[in-house]
Length: 166
Ligand SMILES: [Zn+2]
Image (cartoon, rainbow, N blue to C red):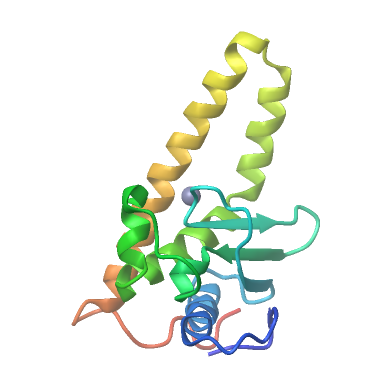
């Protein structure tokens, strides 16, 4: 498990450590070995469970997690859906991390979509944005859960992904 490209504040939180271990495993598995990916306690995330800030010029990403996902601060709001179970359920927590990594991998697609959006008349902009965002979320979430469940499956999952590849 590669740790060398993981940065961020050294907060002694078991859940944060676990999140970084998931990032190390899945970063390798998704071919992001050369990325610098930090995992941090999120601020101002509004209703989002997590958020991934990503650079377009460098292979840098920062995953921010709601404090309640890390056992900090107030408990999650009741209406937070899948994120609520991620506060207690390790599989959902791992899927949250994979979800954010997949967003990072889709940065070029997202930027192209943003450029198209800029060219649209006002009436179409928000509709296009919603369409794009909804489609992204569905795909990213389905893939994240699929990957995590395959890893955790008794047969065929597990092990170290692509140990010698790059
Ligand atoms: Zn998302």
